[in-house]
Length: 121
Image (cartoon, rainbow, N blue to C red):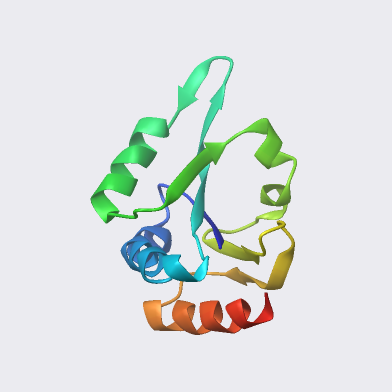
């Protein structure tokens, strides 16, 4: 589950603690959440908004991998993300599974989607 979020996005921040819980609860099923921070990046001039993003991750206890933007990520699916949060489910080979999810969801709604998509892979 790849969750694109931003430090300024209230709905993103509200769902992050529950995403952290889901990441732990589903870990034994081969499931993992990866967060992509759409407003934090690294370039030749240094880090941009990385400290703020780390503060958000720490304060929300979103205990899963979070990646700042890179040129490689911009060339991939993140280039088509037009709103945050946006979530894409992928299989172990990086192929999209199911529909792109735009907007935040409750823990229960995410669990239903996770269960459904795990049955497909």
